[in-house]
Image 1: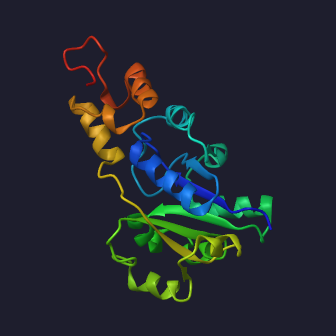
Image 2 (image 1 turned 90 degrees about the vertical axis):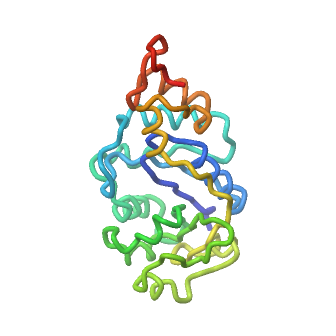
Length: 224
């Protein structure tokens, strides 16, 4: 059976150290390459603050020296709104029904799964790896409808994901970082310090391209 394929989707607007921490943790736990997959036009949030071209460029810079992490432009090539069900169906036409596939998601995102397009069908196409904080109950915030769907699906060994094509859920405990892309964009726009939360190459790109309201270096409120 082919090795486990792990997709970590998101807007990455911008990619930051918290994203990379989750991906590194998943790579170590799952013994699989984590494919970071930037969305073309996410359906669950407002339009991105940076263009698709800029978001891909920043992600490529962030992954340049990250063994075990890779860039997947599948949703960029598809264009339009990025629905996970459509992405996974397209992937299955390429790799078949028997190859193991997993989606890496945050606990908050997983708790909102019932709002996703054709969410029940996702379990026929993929496993879920849910990144959550140590000490938090695994199903905290998970609606009753989704809890019912999880019956018999939760596993505690990454090896179980390698042995089946789809349908199982693994909670990945790790110390998640407190900042978010939303907070970083806000700090850039208001001139507050932010560079320490993103890779150096990404920070330089944001400043060079004046993204998110970043002022030019010679302005009085320069990007700190």
